[in-house]
Image (cartoon, rainbow, N blue to C red; front, side):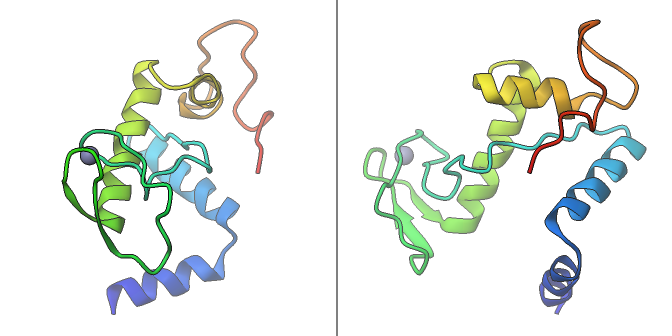
Length: 126
Ligand SMILES: [Zn+2]
């Protein structure tokens, strides 16, 4: 019931508006907000060793890593991967686009790492 209501609520607002609310709440609670690359393969990357299951289909909810043998629930694995990727971005170890996202999106409002950094919102993408 709880998940059903959440899914319906998310369907009621656009994803962009949802991100805005999430970012607002994160800032309000003094928590970092990081958006990872939308194409990051979180469902198909092994959260234990990083191996990627290239042939993962949507209907496959549980899969076994071809490298380390770990058994993954698709959604739990994705959540772990997203957390790990977010921590990498915050620590400066993410990819180039992740680092740009960190600069553009993870800073609290009104702060910037460099004098030439743009204010949050000016570089907002889709
Ligand atoms: Zn693995």
